[in-house]
Image (cartoon, rainbow, N blue to C red; front, side, top):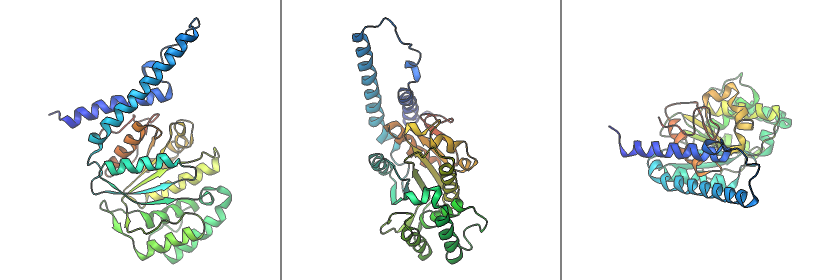
Length: 297
């Protein structure tokens, strides 16, 4: 039996795909080639029409988002982790979409430039080794690489393998204090719960192999301690951007990715991917996701 929710999901999937096509210059508009003899008036008119269509699509998806997202993350908490350079407005908007889906942002954790800077690897390695010995000897693999290890340690402190989440332990607080004290993460404030879901918001793209290896290690480590991890970025992060390169790394098999969060469609897709990650890992969604603009399963 086809329910109203199925109808809504089908409709929003079409418009999410359309939104992705508009952002990338694809979709039904991509087959329209340039008209050499077009007048400046025609060009201006076409530009206006394209802008109007983009505005309409954005408004349409924004209107459909509340009923489509309602209850998807009910009684679930999300740890919001940001990479340096993450757009503050988009981070706020993502948090609002989590709220709209009935979920809760358990806490926000802002990684610093030193944590993701390959030249600071010795600092990260030293701290990770100390914390492994002092706080997480039985929780983190002793042979984990530098960034996999720090990712697992962070995951131990902020995430949970229990879908309902878990209280923050003394061990978790000690790890958070140590990582913050070393200047690798901002102060997280008063955190009470560890979340089953981690939403990692990408920031500046260093376009560097070393930085890509750092990110891959972090997500691999986080995924070992959480029910689900979703890494998200703007449209430019997809394909050849940092998110696109992460998708090509074996570490991405254990997480889900979404690009296009600079659109309402992308943010809706991010929340729907968080829900999917409660039961199914992996998947590349969004404006250039190989698995489609949004998960419907």
